[in-house]
Amino acid sequence: MVRLSREALSPYYLEMSQFRLAFSKAGSLVSLVLVMFGVGLDYTLYPQHFTTLLGARVLTSLATLIVYGVLWTSYGLRYVRFLTLLWLALPQIMIAWMIWYTEGVDSIYFVGLHLALYATGIILPISFLENVGFGLFTYVLYAMACYGHAEGLQDFNRFAGVSLFILFSGTVSSFCTYFNERGRFNMFRLQHEVSQKNAELSRTNQALADIKGQMVQQEKMAALGTLSAGLLHELNNPVNFSLMAIDMGRQLPAVKQDELLSESLGDAREGLVRIQNIVTDLKTFAYQKPDGGNARPFLFENAARSAVRLAGFDLKGVDVTLDMPHDTHVMGDEPALIGVMINLLSNAAHAVRAAQREHPEVAVRAVIEGDRMAITVRDNGQGIPAGNLERVFEPFFTTRDVGSGLGLGLSISYGIVQRHGGTLAVRSEPGAWTEFHFHLPRPA
Image (cartoon, rainbow, N blue to C red):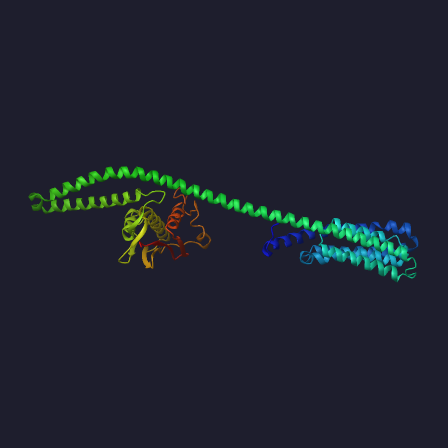
């Protein structure tokens, strides 16, 4: 049998209190009606005492009505146990008084005590100990009513028989209460287990959806990389031919004598070298493997500069600074980490552009910490609202306009950093700055 912790039982106690309150409201009204219905019994059995007995019933009904009103206030839920036992006790006190006032041991009103005991055990959601106490309370009232009667306990055998009958009814009532209480607890325990299983299933489904989204994106990137690799190879050949031709042309005497032609060829060569660098960066990024099989030592500074060049369009007009130690060797999947840096730099560029800073800045900093290197990418953009800070790594979460992004970049970047034994974390001050931070392992 599963045991529930104190924290798990708190909802059970609250649910039971609400359950008791609903039953107590309905039960008190039923009790009031039954008390007044007994007027016919008084008139039939004791017509000479009818007026006095009617007064007792009216007083008991008014007291029950007051308790019913309190149950609807803010005190109802807090004191529902006490209030329930109170309106249960009122008819018992009234019946005991009627026994004393009429015939004592010979009074037929003792039947009313039994009915209350059975109704309490079968219907009302009170606890086992409360029911036992209520049964003993009922018997004490009966004994006092019989003992205090003018004729006392003249018919002791009848008193003993009724006493046994009341104790028997109280025992049966307590027995029913015990199993009712146990059944309600078992029902709650099952509901608690089902709710936990549903919550776990929901988290599992969400995780599967996240993984599916990342796998789809990785397949797209792999297909794009395969296509890009072929195109870049074809593009690199004519660039190399052009560089060779320019270098040969610059050696000609005529070119050396014509300053304008020499300068033009130099500019053309510089442009082709920039294209060659971009092609090299794209080839490095395109040859990444989805299974992470590219882990090797590499210079992170080179990867960061490649990312800056590849994100150059987004970073136009943004001052990008690189603060690196002398040795930036790390161990990992260079193409995948270039992709991480491109994503972080592009997001930073969008943030500073949205903030409309006079001096937009993005700072990339690396610091060696033992056998790992810590990297931070900080911008002076608009920051991230506190409500979104915990959601930035969720797949498909984005604050950009429709069509401006799928919201997968940071989620995929988080997975790549996690694959390298680190965690991609974020800090931000809304309206001031945002900083992404992660660690990479260094070669042994």
